[in-house]
Amino acid sequence: MAQRPDPPAGRRVSRPRARAPETQRGIALMLVLWVIALLVIIAAGMTADQRSETSLAANQIGAARFRALSDAAIAYAVYNLAAPANLLQDQAETLDSDLWVPDGAPRAWRFAGEDLSIAVTDEQSLIDLNQGSRELFSALLGALDLPVEEIDVLADAVLDWRDEDDLRQLNGAEDPDYAAAGRPYGAKDGPFDSVEELQQVLGFDRGLFLVLAPALTVAGSASPANIELAPPLVRAALEGISLEEVAQRIAEELASGSLVEPAAVNRGGPLYRIRVSRAGAPDAPTPTMEALVRVELGSFPPFRVLWRNFAPMRSTPSNLDEGHGL
Image 1 (cartoon, rainbow, N blue to C red):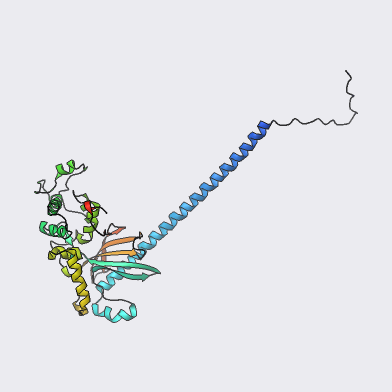
Image 2 (spheres, rainbow, N blue to C red):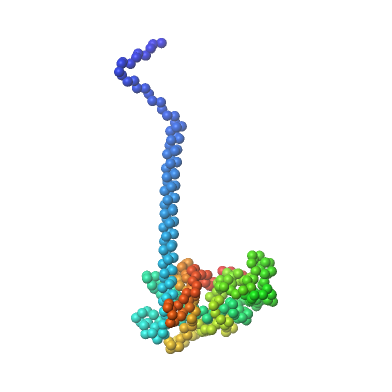
C-alpha cells in the first residue's frame, strides 16, 4: 500500500469536521422552542397579573368614591329634611331644591359629575318586627293575597321566633320544627336584631322577604306612627285593602292636585332610612347604600348614622309566584 506523503514542513493540514448527528440538532431546536414558549407564558402571566391589579385598584377607587358620594347624599337629604319648609320653597328656583317628603319615593340628584338616586323613608311609618301585633302581621301578609292557612303559619312563626319562651303558637315553629326542617338552629327566642333576620324564620324564603323588607323595621313602634308616609304595602295592611286599591287611591290623590301649605307638610322623623344608588339601567346592578339616620337638631353634627349597609337586598320582585320564588 502506498504511503501518503508527509505534508511540507510548516504547512497546516485542515481536516474535515465531524457533523453533529441529526438527533442532536433536533433536540437543540426543541429546547429553543420550549424556552420561547416558557417566556411567552411568563409574559402572559405578568400581563394578566397587571390587568387584575389594575382592575382591583379601579374597583377600590370606585367603591371609595361611591362611599364619599353616599356621605354627601346623606348630608344633602338631612339638610332638606331639617331645613324649614318655607325656606326650601323660597330657594327652590336658585338652589334646585324642593320640599322632600320622606315617603320612599326616589329623587334624582347630581353631585360631582355623578347622577344619583336618593330615597328617604320615615322609619316610624313602617311595621316593627319586635313590637307589631299578630293581627298586624296577618294584615300585612293578607295584603299580598296569601292563603289564610299560610298567613297563620307565618304570623305565628314570627311570634315564636321573637318571644322568650319555648311554647309553640298554634301554627308556629319552635326548636323541634326547625330541626325537622333540617335547620342547624332553632327559634331565636329573642328580639329581631335586623330586618334581614326574618329570612331565618321558618317559612320566609328570599322571595317573600324581598317583598316584605321595605315595609318592616326594628326601630319603630307597636303601630306605624306616620300612616300618611307609609309605603303602599303598610297602608294596605292598616286599612285592610289590597295593594291595587292603595295604588288607585295614591293615583287619585296625585290627580286631585290639592295644594298643601309647606309648613303643614308631615316631614316625619326623627329616624329616617336613606337609600342612595347610582343612576343606571333599571335591570343593571348598581352600587347601593342604605343607612338609618337620626336627625338631632340643635346638636353638632345635626344627625347620627346609626347603621350603614352597602348593597342591601331591597329590590322588590314584580310579583310573588308559587313558592315565593323570583
